[in-house]
Image (tube, rainbow, N blue to C red; front, side):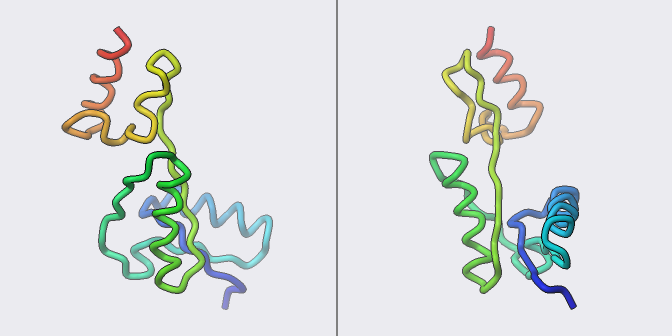
Length: 110
């Protein structure tokens, strides 16, 4: 039995394993669970205006289910574009794919 369980509000297995390894090194017996591990099947709408707001939105989901919830949010902030796409990085283009986002970013930089 572990001393502590923490839910990383993510489905990214690599990110979850990395956090678990770090926390085990720092804190001892810690288990990091995913959204899937706790039975959360929905998508979390990241509609915050900052990375911090989006991380709090995501962490609140497992917290509302009684878990210790943690989350992160990140994106690409380009100084030449006044910080864009920023918090909208994942949905910068209408299509929302990495390829389409990169095309739009390169076009904006021209």
